[in-house]
Image (cartoon, rainbow, N blue to C red):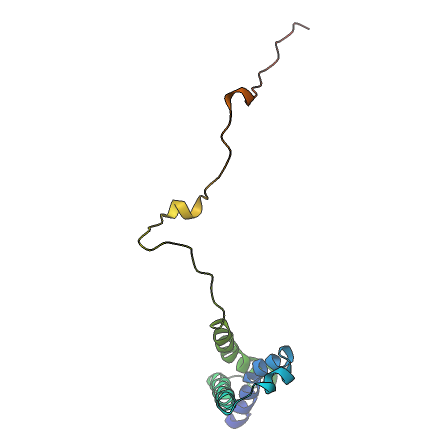
Length: 133
């Protein structure tokens, strides 16, 4: 198999995450707010992912199976796409006041809020008396 064919197959494999993204996102909603800048950014993303998939397929010079080259093309772009999508998620922020320090044990052992026990309500249990029988 020629090098050019390997690069094209790997590049097509790299575009698989974008196709899967179209399956998840409603295309009508995507195109309603589409601007020129957003479409240019999307086109740049497609070119970069195709390039990365082609590079990964090219680096596996001993591989000649088109299916395996397609799978190899998916690897790096899929990881990069997951990282790009993960940056949009905001992690919950800890509720720590300024200047307050927290120890590891305070994080691992939670605080317990309980009602105080009154002495007259404490029940005790003892073993029954032994019998000879």
